[in-house]
Length: 245
Ligand SMILES: [Cu+2]
Image 1 (cartoon, rainbow, N blue to C red):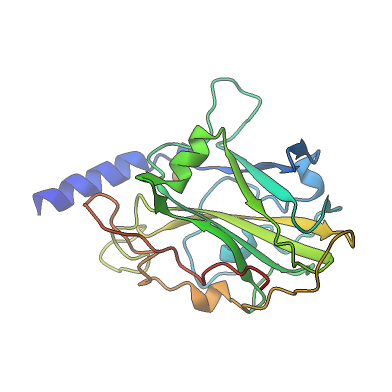
Image 2 (spheres, rainbow, N blue to C red; image 1 turned 180 degrees about the vertical axis):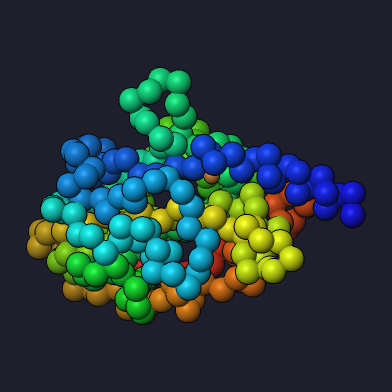
């Protein structure tokens, strides 16, 4: 009981409203892709999403508002998404509060102007707790950048790429536990419009058909996980990554 109270105080203290993050940029093979508002469907705030039944869990609160343009890339390119707390131009600001320990997951779907709800997603990359460090802490160490590679086999065309910080600092109780309201994993999803060129592209269409509203469950061990006690292993929610093979 004492441990539980200590954990609760720790978790509540960690959850300052100001401690969240959102996505502020994209690089392709190390080159900045320019004004992020052109291709990221940015939410109006940096608040987390906790409701697994809401379409906001997919591409956040502005997910159904298409951005004007696309990041141009090729199959096999190394993409990098850049996260920050609030204002990357403010030298006193920071990437993410280190209380927000958790996983970083990247998914892809065929392009839609809609909000991304439905069984259209495949996972491209995931990192949870490896080498003694949470993925979000590695991201902070890496100045907010999270890299991944577009599979060589990926077909040319327009896509949405969704990257999610999955903070687990409140996830020692399930997100729908009536006895512990406001707890559970905090998702920070962001969707980027990407156009993959014909050059060097394969012909594989991502086909995992994952649906966040039915595939993410409150009791999933990847979303309901106590980071404050010793553990052997953490497995993120969702399928294992699609490789195009
Ligand atoms: Cu936060």
